Length: 58
Image (cartoon, rainbow, N blue to C red):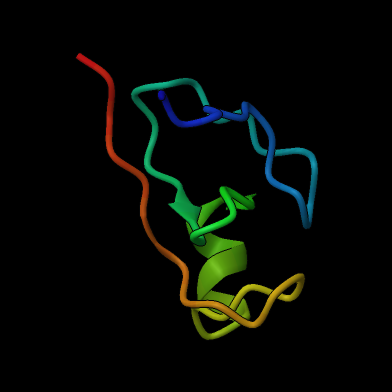
């Protein structure tokens, strides 16, 4: 089962996040750009989980 590689930040919705871009995700695959993740102190506002670097597809 592959990750749902979302292409927009769920907070600002303006940051395009192609598959090879740096992004942060939680265990539910909520997706945020790096600046928004840092502003939220790496805590997902949806579930309270940790936001970690999203793996890149090759």
